[in-house]
Image 1 (cartoon, helix red, strand yellow):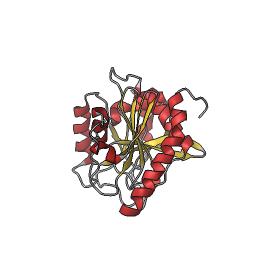
Image 2: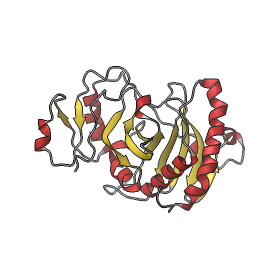
Image 3: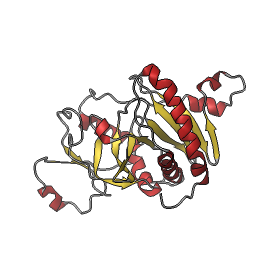
Length: 260
């Protein structure tokens, strides 16, 4: 990271990373293995980018995004960009309308020494580090659970320059603030890989999120279609199955999204 502009982020990063690691060590032995945890520098970079993205507007709406620290190789069917996007406010805000639906996470990982957004995923390994933008300046740090419930364990809340490290038992206290109780109840459902035709899902989702957009489905064994598309394609998706474990869905083609 070249410049620190979100003071609460760099001051809280080490505390959040240590708290997350403690929560991880307490839960993982009980429920199974754990995904790699980010270091303090990675937490700081994710907080910095997410905070400033939360204050921007895209298509007149404030962004709601979920960042997950996870490698694409750890997933079965990741939606991977041809080129990773910078972990910065502007790219995150531009992507927000496409990934604001519940259960979609933007994947963050370090490649060649640099953090970047490699794509998106519905599934996460057990106990992955997740940073969700809930509102302007309001972010929640979570751990994904080891079961298939699609729920998360909340570890910390940042609201502007206020940082709260969450104890799951705090909700049982009589003087627990209503805001904290509501944040402790945040949960996201994951979509099943066995669901219906992925193209139907995409069409329904595009209509429901109300932002418009276009999906271009092209042949998988030729590049000639690129001649009719304005370059560069900002959010091109890598070929399905190129970085996945096991076979991709039968209907999944080489789907790409062009720049607007």
